[in-house]
Image 1 (cartoon, rainbow, N blue to C red):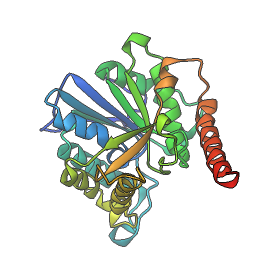
Image 2: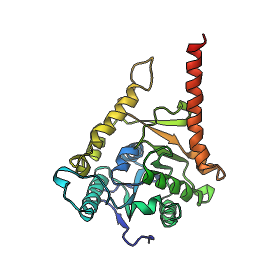
Image 3: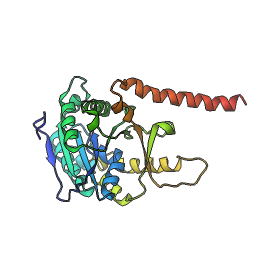
Image 4: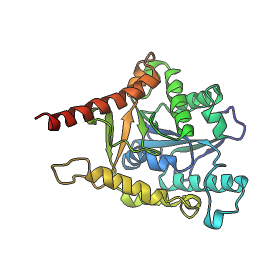
Length: 280
């Protein structure tokens, strides 16, 4: 398979686990996948017929750095982050890891179709059952560039070849506020050690000043505890996602309108609850 970016790399771990049911993640940065697509990783890992494919779109040059990494150049960080992502692929027994190595500016550009075309090639090759990507209400512009291009890529496929499900996952914004009918809740209580190990391999971020490992585990615990107010916890770890499937079943659905409708639903729900207690 050839890609539009000649710097793209394909990595297949020695312990790659292949199966008929494919879960595929389209992410912006190294370590995003392990934060947002843990459900797909676990499903593939625990199912003898499951397989997980990871796609990292950017080169990692702009990552924050401190500590022992403080004086590392962008080129140094790009190399380190590629190595770390490959380590995660080994821990999670990914079938294939794609490192597309685009600059963030290319991902954020609405006129860049090269990335969309590369996504299409990967989707056609692996024919995933489910796709995990960033959510449309994320505050990171590069993440928004990925999810919008991901939707466009799936829409280029014949409907019979499209994934059954597509999820926009938590990274740079939590999704606990979404109405229960509009979000997917994934129980990550199994294999907690493996999920912790996946996050832990990204030392350049953790030691470099961003405790994504603790923050991610804390969010998952908070989601589990605050998911129900009147019952005991039934899960130890939960991550949420916005169900993007309607956008890949209806090509005419407007992406912005779809995203804003979730805010409108929240607005109406909040108003209704306040009205009840103010006007009894």
